[in-house]
Length: 89
Image (tube, rainbow, N blue to C red; front, side):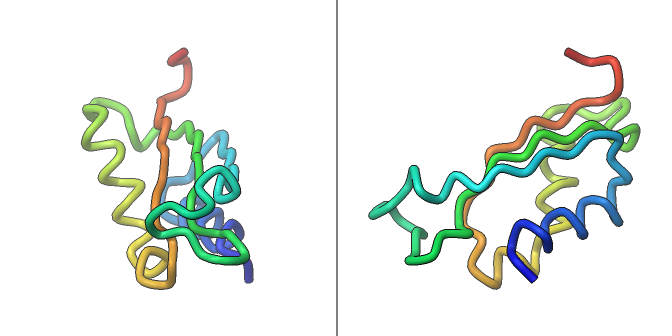
């Protein structure tokens, strides 16, 4: 299973998103720390979930990161996260 598929499965199971977009941006980081041949190291995530209601931006990001501990251990290096509730711009 690709890293993108693993991320999608974990976030879907753990945060029940209404919207989920996962972009592999590893090619933009070639030669930087954490990058490796073949990519799958740097991602941008846009996620909309009711689970974020009433939580700060930092708390929302922690919820996302908490779901992906195994993926970080397996080579995921960096995430850019946009976490919103339904109706937020």
